Every structure is written in C-alpha cells, then in structure tokens.
Amino acid sequence: MATAAITETRQYLTFKLNEEVFGVDVVQVREILDYIKITKVPQTPDFMCGVINLRGSVVPVIDMRLKFGMLKTEITVNTCIVVMEVNMDGETFILGALVDSVQEVFELEPNDIEPAPKIGTRLNTEFIKGMGKKEEKFIIILDIDKVFSSIEIESITTGSKEVEEKS
Image (cartoon, one colour):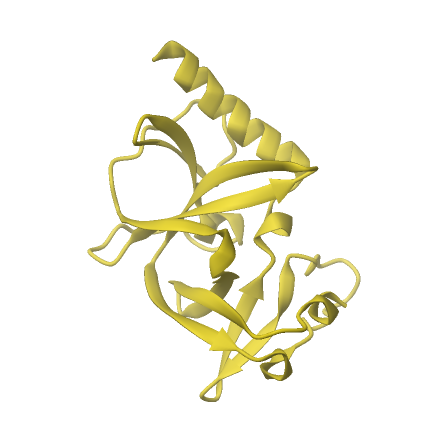
C-alpha cells in the first residue's frame, strides 16, 4: 500500500476542490499564485485550462476539479494556481494546478495517515497516498506524480511547447 512509503513526519500543503480537502507534499510545491489569466491551448485534454507565463517560462495549468471528475472550477477571489513539480519516468515537469482555495501547511505524523480506501478493482486510487486525519476531518493526501498518466503529461507538455515555440 502507498502509505507504507510514509514513514516520517511530513509537511503538506492543503487545498480545497469543491468541499473536499486535498494535500500534497510541500517538497513538490514551487509556489502559490493568485489566479492570473490563462491562455487556452487548442486540442488539449478538457482538464487542461491552458498555459501561463511564469517569469518567461510556459507552464501548463490543470483544472484539478475536472481532472477528478468534478464540475469546472469557478473563478473566485480565493482561486489559486499551485505550481508543482511532477516527476515521471525520471523527468521533472512543472505544472500549475487550478484549485478553489489554498488552506494551510501543516505536519502529519505517519500514524495520522490511513491507507487509501479500496473501492473495487475498477476505480484507480493509485494516486492517493492515504487519508490524513486532522481534527476529525479527512484530508486526501495525493501522490501528485501519479495523478497524471505519462500520455496525459506528454499531451500537456507538448501543447505548452508548441505555444513556447510560437512566442
């Protein structure tokens, strides 16, 4: 189980999607941006909002609600883009995650994290490291490296490279 890898106290950045709270290891978070204009890229997956210019670099932005099968994120004063490093096949990619709001950074002990629930064999929960418990609430701890497939990463980064080449 994925929680076997969590053997030490770690810090997690939490954010909201709809009414659910998710957490990612702060080690993979580069920065948090207030919502800025996103340039749409044609022929990309539905969950890809487009790209942003981050100090001269083109960064793809993913609507995490759409990625997880929820309704599209509505832009509010609390909407943020969490810029993260995603590691896949030995390569590091920089992605922006559009989220409803960022909550806080806090530490979780390994014994405060339970394994992801088994929900049959057809539902892939591989991207969930575990369920963190904090003050009687659950936080879905994501393994951000497993949220996207290699095919999705390729389609996302190919689209952003084409935009960069046209600039």
